[in-house]
Length: 241
Image 1: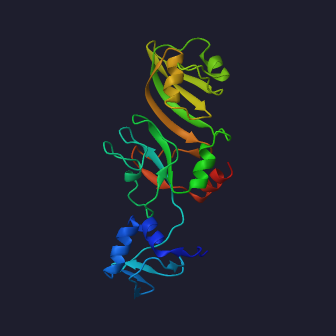
Image 2 (image 1 turned 30 degrees about the horizontal axis):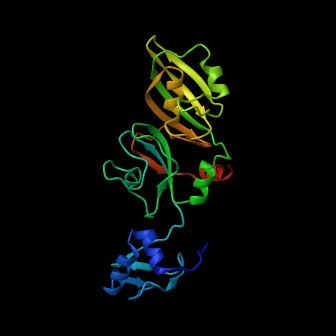
Image 3 (image 1 turned 120 degrees about the vertical axis):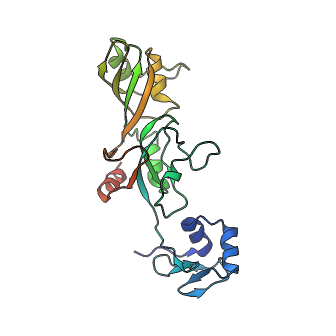
């Protein structure tokens, strides 16, 4: 299905990473062609998917949106730009669009599921406080959970600043006397929420990994740092949220 007409400079900024100034300069140098004809201006409109745009002879294929499932590794920041750490978008080497961003964020030392896309409408639905999308984490911790931990999480945990979380589901999985493992399902995304909830019951998170967000479940075949495109079924299920 053909896209609506759009300005050539916008097409180039979205699909090549050019700034509008860079696109304009490239056109002046004769590097850009539309349907085989060199164009010196970028303020005209084209039909993406119908007209062929090339830069230095290489065709630039238009995609309205891209969707990637990333298994975020520790040490990578959930951002599009950062002066200190590598970013999650820099890990997506096969992207065609230049405007991808992470849907939500995981802490620097947290691993696991992260959706990378440029679909702002979908991101808004997944992150909207009104929708209360479930997020499931696997974690290890030091310390000992109190006997009533599950009940306290189910009622909502009062954090150190006095705010109370929404009800959550805590599933203790293992305990060795000094610490253990658990699975936690939350329905909101407060700053450092999982770590703060565990601290509120006297435990410290030592490892944290997100394994699902809504209907989207982390592919077990993806190692930290690896990614793949969403399947049509996964995308359709997300759009139903």
